[in-house]
Image (cartoon, rainbow, N blue to C red; front, side, top):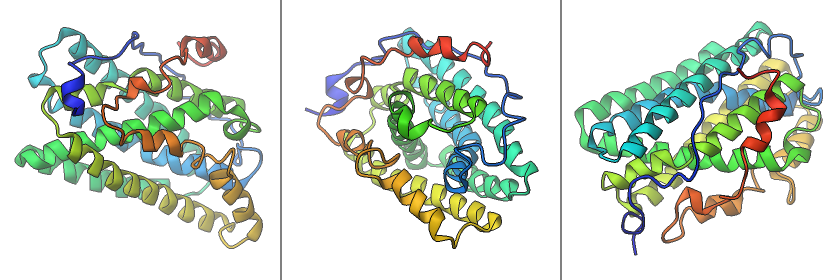
Length: 287
């Protein structure tokens, strides 16, 4: 049975809440804000550089199908999805400015992401296949960010130990909101007749380009820092990313594979995670 046959329009089981994180919160974070380590710090910087234009792309891709949605609940969730993603854009731009003030070529790296994603969105205005592909990519990246968010919220030893409190709060805030709206783009895709087969194909491509962008950013930042060719950098990096038990990228691999199961939906995975239990930890940073 195909995915679109299994679920109807909105399948989000909770309310999506828009919270405003203080964009100035990370202004005084140290240069190496993650355990004093260049690799860990620049891994998070590399992620953050992808987010602002990536979030704008997600918003455009979902809104392109809004007029085809009839379910009032899903329409409300689309509005909340866009509002959350817009806040993520603003806050990660502020965080990226911190790296820029330390002399890293953030603007150039952001410009590459902006050029490629806006070019794809323009194709979507002219060609139905590109519009569908943009939404499929959004669904895939929302799954990718949701499973990384789950690691941030549940695997503190690997993802938060030694992290500057303000940056830690930022990523916790982002993670809990990614969890809340993780099914919205998926629901829009299936409600508008998207193919499950095409979606699985899109996941391979999206994952490849996401990881490529991440490691291009990381390499440039480490090179600028003078840390790229140091064995100590990669010794830390290999363990951080690919450690068999606590690796930031290896631990969520089974969650990534779940996307390819027949009848998959994001809310079939980790649906017992209570996002509101984390809100109290963020009161100093969130309005």
